[in-house]
Length: 164
Ligand code: MG
Image 1 (cartoon, rainbow, N blue to C red):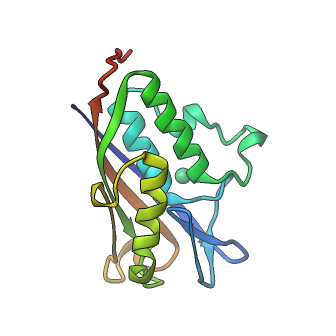
Image 2 (image 1 turned 45 degrees about the vertical axis):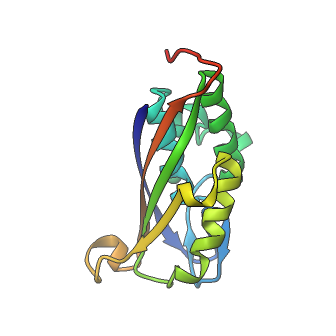
Image 3 (image 1 turned 180 degrees about the vertical axis):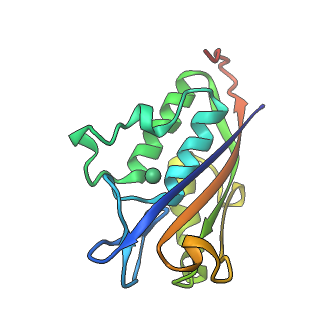
């Protein structure tokens, strides 16, 4: 078993779509970034890469690379899962927490879990997405940005493999 942790933060800005775990959430602002700025999927990818000691998404998908402008983070997640599989590892479960004051995310959580479960090759029961506020405190509470945290477990796949 390998454990991984990831975190990410993006600013909120007008004129951007708000995309969280691949779900387009209707809101007056969206997250700013080179890709689709899906902060939750970014934190999850860093957790997976961390568990495999493969660096982080800044190494794999540099924001100076035009190929990743507006990139769909769910597709990048798929690439990360493939990289891990090449080393003989597979995800066991993941737990993602989104920190956002607004909007209310509860109605979108199951769609987020479904999107992640499809890319991870895991049943929904092994994919947790949660949302929390900071009760108005800090940049998330002031609506200036959103953060996300993720943890994951990897297990050695039956075909073996060695981590670097
Ligand atoms: Mg990011």
